[in-house]
Length: 105
Image (cartoon, rainbow, N blue to C red; front, side):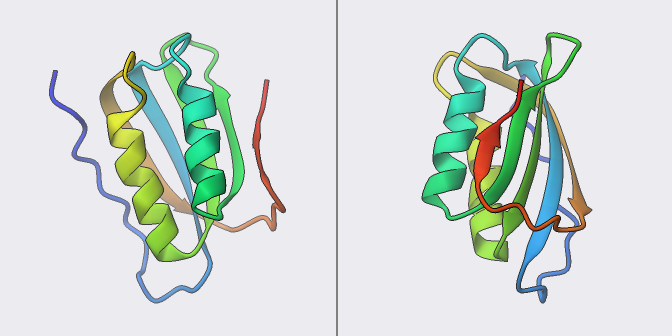
């Protein structure tokens, strides 16, 4: 299946912004959460990532500057080598002031 072409609909003029994303496909048991955490930390983002209860989704909440969030979204589309991203839903969210980026269980 083709990679998702979802686009975030977030105003580009906000200095700090936040997104919520749901990534669907083969995204559990393939290192996807650690992949997201590693890239988010490298990009200076705060938030969290966790597996969805359905066994086929990963949920991401991230906040930081617009450029870093755009870079994270691009990485979510690709995922780690063993993954397959079938679709993504991305929406803007309110920043909650997270201090770091964690994996939630």
